[in-house]
Structures are given as C-alpha cells and as structure tokens.
Amino acid sequence: MLTKDFDYELPKELIAQEPVEPRDRSRLMVVDRRSGTLEHRIFEEIITYFKPGDVLVVNNTKVMPARLYGTKADTGARIEILLLRPAGPGQYEALVKPGKKVKLGTTIVFGHGELVATVVDYTPHGGRILDLEYSGVLEEVLEKLGTMPLPPYITHQLDDPSRYQTVYGRHWGSAAAPTAGLHFTESLLTRIKEQGIEIVQLLLHVGLGTFRPVEAEKIEDHKMHSEFFRLEAEAAERINQAKVHGGRIIAVGTTSVRVLETAAENSGKVRAQEGWTDIFIYPGYRFKTVDALITNFHLPQSTLLMLVSAFAGSELTQRAYAEAIASRYRFFSFGDAMFIF
Image 1 (tube, helix red, strand yellow):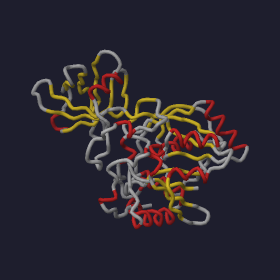
Image 2 (image 1 turned 180 degrees about the vertical axis):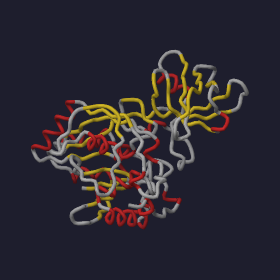
Image 3 (image 1 turned 120 degrees about the vertical axis):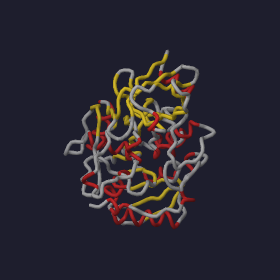
Image 4 (image 1 turned 90 degrees about the horizontal axis):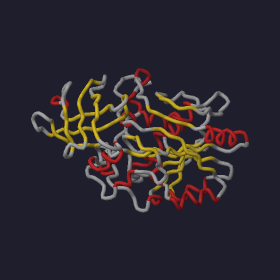
C-alpha cells in the first residue's frame, strides 16, 4: 500500500489558526459506515447519536509547556528546544533548533538558570537526549519558562493556553494535544452522562511522531513511534461490561483508539496494562474493540489519516475529506470534527 494514496490537496485557508468558541460549536461531519451517508451538524449535537449503554473513552493526558528558548552557556547563541518524553532519570528526549549548534556536551541555560540542559546523547531521528538540572518540580519550572508547543502550521501563540488542553486533561506529559477532545465542554460532558452514557478515561502521552508525514514509499515500511499509555483495571472492566451488554465503545481521538486496540483481546475485551505502544493501524487492520470514532481532519500522508481510513474505509474517507473541503470545514488541530460509526 502506497503512502501517496493518502495524499490530498488542502487550501491553506482551511487550516484552522484558532479554536472555535465555545468549544462545542465547531462543525461536525457524521459518517455512517454502513450506509455511506454524510451529515453536517454542530459538535454539541453529537449527543443525539449516542445511546444509553454506550461508553465514551477519552484520553486524559495534558500537554506540557514544552517549547523552551534558552542560550548556549559558552557563546550566548539562542537555542530552541522541544521536550518530547522522559529518557531516563533526570533526562528528556528533545528536538533542538538550530541542530548544528547543539552538539554532544553543549549546555543550554533557560531563564536565569532555573533550568539547565546538557546534551548527553543523540537520537536516531536527529533529536537529543538532555540531562536536566533544576530545583523543585519540573512541571512548575516549565510552566514558568515554557510555552505551549503548537504545531508549525499554527502561526501564532494562543491568548489562552488552556484552549490547547482538553477540559478533562489530568496527567501532564504530552508534547501535543489529543485534539479530538478539544471539542468537549464540561456542560456537554454532563449532558452525555445524564443520557446514560459512561465516560471512561485512559492515558496516552502524545508524541510529535503522531503528526509527521510518513516518508516511506510503502506504508508497511514505516516505523511507528512509541508512546506511553495506561489503561487501569476499573476502566477496562467498564469497557468490558459494556461489550457484554451490547454497548458501543466510542473512542475520542486516534490516541484512545491506539490504547484500546493495543489492550484488546480477540474477543473485543480489553486487559488493564501500561507500557509503550507502537501499534500502526492502516487499511486492512481488523478492529477488535472500537465501535465508533470521534476525530479531527488530519494531515495528508499521516498515520492518523491512515488509521481513519482503516476504520471508515479508504473510499469513504476520501469522499468525506473531499466533501469537507468543498464545504469549507476547518482542518487539523483547531479544526472541525468527524463522528464515524
């Protein structure tokens, strides 16, 4: 299967630069896999497609303010880093810019020395392993010194950084937001619960590899990045009980899908576990647990688009994207949503 089969042309003006206010007033395309029909709604209306006994599965990760600007200790040159994930005690994997200036042994100072990073190794994909020195709690240090790591296609910082967090985010550690969840408000979640739909939380810390285009000519040759996940016993039990009683498992975002399908048994039930997943879902994959998917419109040639194509079918996905472009939907992280069932 060729990567180019997942390409499409997107007018630049359809890349959403700011989130919709309020969150649940973004547009929603409803995709019925069985009939092949497409409907145009508003996101808050998604509740009309839920049924008592369904389980809504959300990813409760929080985005780190992981983009930092510092200076080289020896020359004063300005350096930008983006922390990606822990790489050992006191160490983080990071992207650095400009990379040519950041060699093994380089020390970078942030703020007034509240954080100092020293390069101790390279990564296979051009990143660096940094040894971090700081006092206190790293989260508090980053909240003081860092900024939200918005994707490069968003051209300015947010006035309100919380708009790049879900309202249910709890566990700090992502380098990017699980963007399908950005559409939910507290009031919408309350209405969903009142309708008899359970909301179950799991965790996957999103890495930047999620959003990168696949570079291999054949998608089977692509090496998927790994991300840390956790599915707790209580959450697994609630999902399994819903399966037994005929409820649907509705995944909010591709990150939730990756956890559920990593933890899935052939029966469709899931097993509580934590660790690292590098599951790569593309057309031909047989889903075991997920029955419906809420997701945004994704970048061309990305693993996210391949996952959606696996779930909805390539032909229907292509038709839905063509319709979204013709109808002037907003794309990517701050864009509109799809509900596929």
